[in-house]
Image (tube, rainbow, N blue to C red):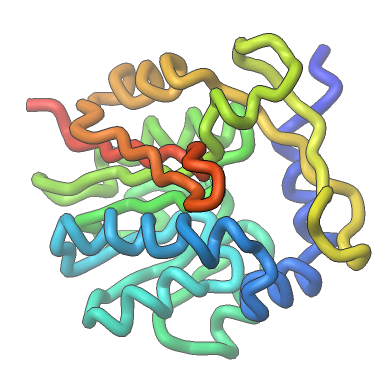
Length: 225
């Protein structure tokens, strides 16, 4: 039996809403400020979408940024406190919704882009999201995923799929109980796209300027013909 689970991820994030909101809004996460925030914004804007669904939106920063470009965006998150913070800040639409509950019937709309920015941490929840994603997209829509780069994030562990313990190293002492996460290799990520009707049309590797090493990987999946 796995030591970790998708349920533990949610439980841990519910304990860390306040420090996470502070970290995001105060620009405490250096890699995001230097590279990854702008990388995901650019990837979404390159699709020239009219509508976007931000899956796992947290406190809503990406929805607010897309609103500045005139894009109608909906942010969803399973943690009610994150959605409350997002709604208070405004700049878009927000809804409390779990990955497992995500379906065309729960939203009653389709989107030009589904974006997941460092929000795909689980196993079964992520599999469900990918299964539902094609029916949530418009005909020429895209699923855009930014996540940790598997090669850079593997550390000393074996390069194979599996649960990993979380860590708040480099963050403030306000954080508690780091959430576990499910590690996927580059090949496994691409297989996840392909098995659910997507073609990976682009794979981007934003680099950290100081080290010239990957800060993340961005997959852009389009619906296969």
